[in-house]
Length: 204
Image (cartoon, rainbow, N blue to C red; front, side, top):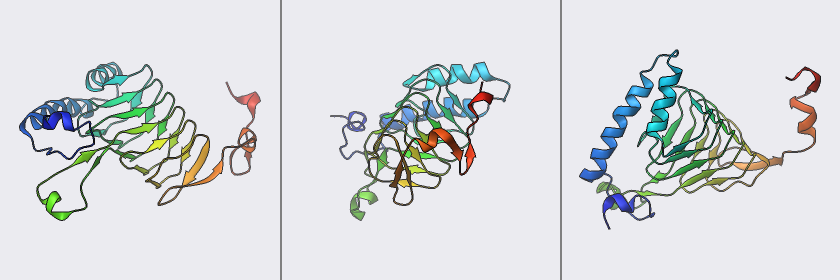
């Protein structure tokens, strides 16, 4: 099995492999082009994202600067996903994100890890585990999602959280390490922020 193939098996491999690095550099050139676009070049950004990503649905928007190890080559986005400034996707293996999910500024989603054993790190060994983020999630500013994590549909991850374990659907989770704070409830149909009520008559 080649080093390139091992990227997606969870096995230890060497990311310094010539084949891997050649592909990575080619893809990072395209990412550089994306980050160099002007705000008025919306159509060019859409075209570049379609070329860069493994899959990307309609209505997705990623605000530059955007960082990704393989420029999105292993990223699978549904539709209408929004990412604010500074999204970092360590996409050495696959990242799956469901429709309507939102990322706050400076979120990190990492699939790559390194062995605890110093001698293996010295040789630059790495392993990758996929990340799954469900439909209609909100990942708050500065959150970090580590390799192998699954986040359930509709869940909110609080700003600055470090998600080290799977989170169920339909909850608010916060902290380092990130833990479930509460379920999303009927009260959330009435209030959108602290004691501020949702006025449905004024929503378009």
